[in-house]
Image (tube, rainbow, N blue to C red; front, side, top):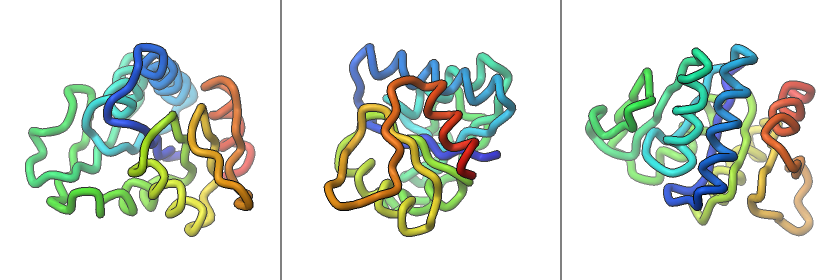
Length: 149
């Protein structure tokens, strides 16, 4: 399964550790990781997935594939800026959000619109909106999307 992992481009050490653990869990279970391809959560999840032998796909906001973090196996340049957020979500069968700001919030909206199963680790809680399974650990996040995909 392809799992889109979304989250902040700037993260704390704790958030980076969570994202890296998530990537490792996804890689260990044979899932591909789709992300925005840059730093923060994106780099950490790709690092973890790569260490576990998983495949990583980065859908970049820029026009240059070379802008991808060093752990992206397949870089896709879009030149679309944050408009590429919809492509990150569309190219996954499920979505896991780690923390994040307004870009992550937009991706959560797209994920829910597209009917993707969504798990959240310390991410936005949207009152009156169902569909995000807020969990405590990377393992629970992967189990949640596997069960619902």
